[in-house]
Image 1 (cartoon, one colour):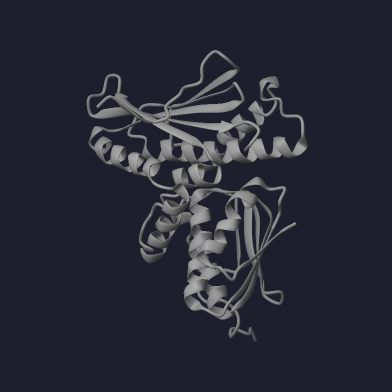
Image 2: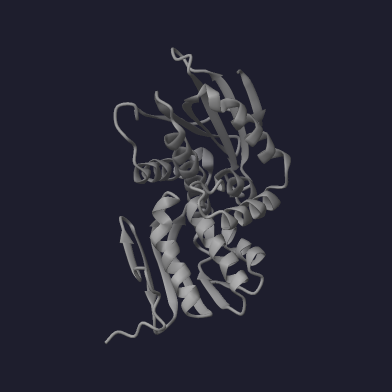
Length: 187
Length: 124
């Protein structure tokens, strides 16, 4: 089950770092709370000196991009979490904002996700996005839009990676870690 | 007596939730989006119905986004699907007013043209 897809990189000690842990096993996390958590990271890291964001337009772009990408990642993690915690770890280093979001998923879903993630990175994101929206319009019964990663790749130029590991202490689950990187200043 | 001929039917024209409001200004034929919209796909249904209703009622329509700070991917999906519905309906005149100081709008609104080439996008 172990394996990496895309450009997987976790934040290191090279720059300021923050970790937030949700314990949704004990209480449900509502989507408004995902939004608040995403905005916290965006507004926290815009202030760290390593981000070197002084121009108002740059600060606005950073908050908008980090807020968007993190909100999508946290919504996914909370929505597909099959138990255990949801962990968000983010940092700024060498001009990049780096985040890894971890959550447990059912082992049975791993193969399907592998294929899906590989397809996302294989094609042209703008083309895939158009294709997906046309499919969504033709199938109104679909309950997920599938546009989260595609918009991150296409509109935000995010670099994405995924890693699958066994979930500690639960053979029915796998631990999925999703990373995203954004240029602090070209956001 | 309410004039129902040009009013969207079967949907609310003023939708409010925590931190957001979407409402239709009938005389100005303008849909206003305000606040932060980060809902799940199913939670967008009332707004989707409102968009469909106003599109069916009139071919001329403005969408004002200048007060919409955030929109998540499920909301972007709703917006793009609306553009496809307008393309399929044909002979529509749709204008989107946005703001260049709201980052998601500069990044994601231009894609509307791919789904509806005739749409006019004005970023203040």
